[in-house]
Length: 230
Figure: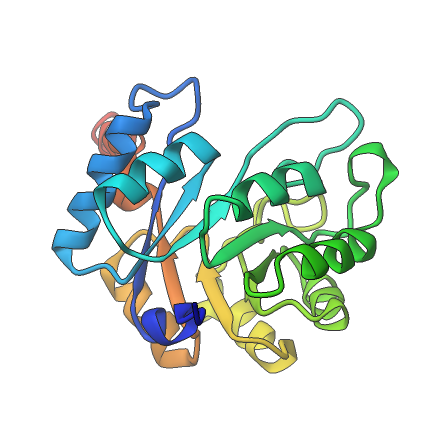
């Protein structure tokens, strides 16, 4: 079957439906209902974490999914689909896209990203690979390795970008990424207002991912409370 993901999401919204174990909404059933709400709202795609959540969502809706697996390893700071084991498990669910960390940091067991990409391409030639990057150097690495999509997901979350916000200076960092990236750019991370989502698409992002501002009510409530308590 042809992978139509790029056609499906161009210029549209992707909703990230994720909840970690320490969050109140951590439940595959709840994530599937979040996905249904996103579909009914008009979202064109989803991003989801873990095989069980992805399968629950697939049972509920037919939107294309960017699949990831967040796994912590003692010997590495890389946690987004960090090894071939996780990439293989996520791809086996049939998602059209698997995203993995491309931040230049040491991967678990000292495995090289280039080797993982090569192995993945052989096993899953029809599945797109997305690079979750944090810096322009990461984008260049993703170019070199031939990733199909380049995300800004990790900008502000790596040692060399900590505290940075992609929206600063009218999305100046995104503008630089768009100049450097060889593949379609997925703008993701801290897009917390509709006007920001519109702006990144106007600037040239291929598609935009919004998560916390839509699917994390605890986080949203905390922002309201923090403002009220000032």
